[in-house]
Length: 482
Ligand code: LFR
Image (cartoon, rainbow, N blue to C red; front, side, top):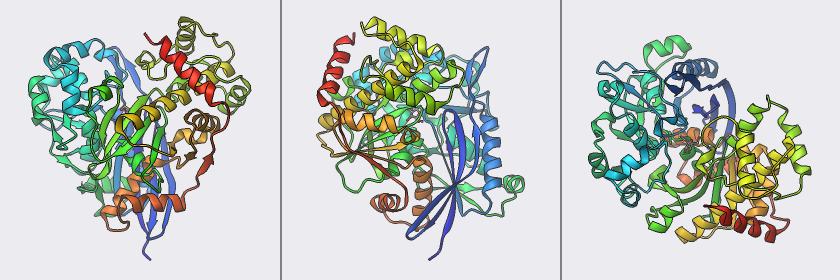
């Protein structure tokens, strides 16, 4: 049968890549056309994304990809660029780890109490949600001059095609969307003085998003017309779409800089208990709900590795495997770990403050981080099942963390459930398959998942080890929480 090629632009917090997926009725192959660093830049006014550098990386990637039938873009969530009345970008997009949102939540909650905000949007509290960012920016000259706000994937799509839209899965992370109507939360926006006219019209995964502009064709050497297709432009939405689950009773953990751990549901869970547990109801493909919790993820390790001057990761993991289990654990959900810098010191402080042994060697720090992540995975998946009344019997790990066998094994042990690890490039695969589906090449969501399960290498980890030790660690951490 016919094989089509789709370019998936997938931008992560530390690198971007352009992948090419070749999709047939019963085949799926992914290859990397181009990978480039994404380095946040600290300027006097704060931490910024180098979005022009990213766009240049996208163009290089499309050039390297060669002939493709369509292009799709996904990236991390919540961040945006502002355009002036002429459509020109106003400044560099602010990084979600920038400090400008400190103390802003209280301002928002004075207008809309957190309980009401959750009941209306289903989005967990995180200081970086777009809603808080916009509130932090309220009286800036830049926002006053802005006539349009485009989320990062939508901004790049605009530069590629000249067309503006707001893709729904990523829009849900603004905390300005109602997960029941899958439309804007007009009431919340009005009460916070946020002008929804800033946003371009909503579009959904699979919708057309224009064709590459003539200048882009020229610069990339591609022959037009090349359509751009809206995908689950939130990377986590694309990654969840690529979870190779065969039934309904599964949980997933999208690993990378973050661990996003939870369930796919048909309807949001908007209870007060769910809010207190800090679960989010982001939107996924086909109106599904990504009911999950943000866990700090491998960011904790990445920041330590950076502080140590980039030692060999394999070596660190070998050392960590030798360290006794669960000596000390930190709360990997704690926003105290959000900002960059001094990570080993901050982890040591957290251990000291909770009366646990303070890690000394790099192996001990690494083990502490992996045990803490596995424990956070256990808590999130346990609580999600209870809060959503949706039991599971398998945990799928997708994304960069699948390469970390120790993390996968510890997660299986901690959850007391089998873990199926893979695919690693889940976001890119979900991106590719939504394009393929829009062009009639694959069937429904289940069909996409079956195709991934059949074609991608997966590794299974059975739970082993000491279940009581994980229960005790969970209790210890809960006890230590303020
Ligand atoms: C993962 C991710 C998370 C989001 C965080 C910030 O890459 O998209 O889902 O909470 O980045 O945007």
